Amino acid sequence: MCAISISPSALVTPPGQGHTLLVADDDPALRAVLKNSLEQEGYRVRCASNGAEALDMVRQARPSAAILDIVMPEMDGLQTCRALRAFSDVPVIITSGLDSEGDVIAGLEAGADDYMAKPYSLAVLKARLVSVIRRDAAGRSTANLLYDDGHLTVQVYPPCVRKNGRVVALRPKEYMLLAGLIMRRGSIVSRDTLLMLVWGSDWSNKSRVLAPAISRLRRAIEDTPRTPDYVHTRHHLGYVFQPPSDRDPSSRAASGKRYSE
Image (tube, rainbow, N blue to C red; front, top):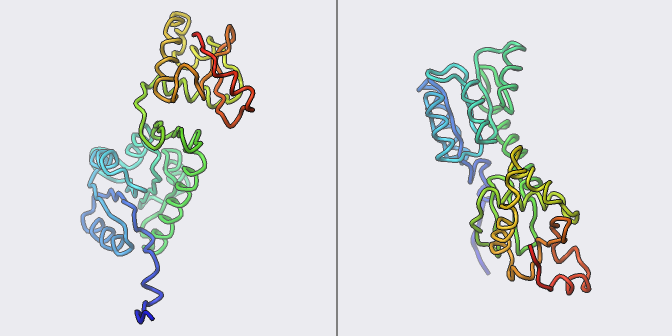
């Protein structure tokens, strides 16, 4: 019989375990206090003294959440948050000595997920961090996968396609073609619609690029591109994303015929 005694508290996972945080504030004393306190909760903490540093660190560290002070040199918290939203949806909590209704609204409109007026309670800050990270994780788990059947996985952000667990190298427009077809799963999408969706306003000059792009996409995601399981041609009509799970055996057998672009 095992005689090892484990305290119940030892089995509790720290709330920050596995998460990296960014703390951006021009006050070195406050940065030090936040870093020390949050690391005690299990977080890995990266610090920045201005907005430009903060943006670089988000790109490098990919934090689970960011705490941005409004008053910072070079680029204030609001400007930093707006710039951040151009390439990242990391949860952001803005902190500021400004606490009017207009200040809070400005912070939220800049893209922040929460706003805390200084001085604030460290316990409340920690609780809000857990909350925004939890909401973000829940949103990603339900919305970040566009398609997954255990064989083919299509992720929304960052855009990524995996086949049998391995990343598939797709060009941006090939990914857009696949995503556009998946979002219309089971419906025939005309060539003109796909051209407009992927190539934009000058699609009418791109009619010859669609078939080669579909061929490259099939070579990347299909086991046998000549008898595709996912992206099917409907002659004179367009293309349809119809995986094996959506088809009965007779239609699947029919799909084994050679196709033409």
